[in-house]
Image (cartoon, rainbow, N blue to C red; front, side, top):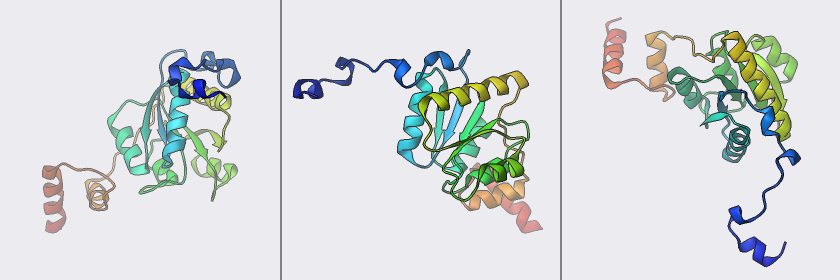
Length: 192
């Protein structure tokens, strides 16, 4: 690459043809919202960028606790989930979801293999992708999962949890309670 081209802003450089890495037509027919959960910032950001380019609305979470918080508070069509996360790992996030959720596992599968994942979380898992994933394959699988979620009326939803469990999670820094709710729950626990 010549020095003149290196010094130009990214807009001035001729873009790669989309066919060489991802076809936007393979993306969603309507804007689907995908939550990308990965604690590796560079992987999460590049994955989100690919999906945004393909036409998805993308939200990002850097750990399992933030992912469950976002799932409980926002409308999300499907979840792209790494298994090895900080604070609350991928299997714990999966255990917190209602059975009607649509999830694509996106992981290096360090401790789990696909048959084990499907056996443990079968109805939730639409597909499993081993990192690194070619961009075209990522878009293809996420588009199929989003279409499946839309056709079946599935959205990832966090199961309701008992207030005492919410307090334990809050004390561990894994959930957020309002100060008033926390005081009420603390008083209830103290009273027995």
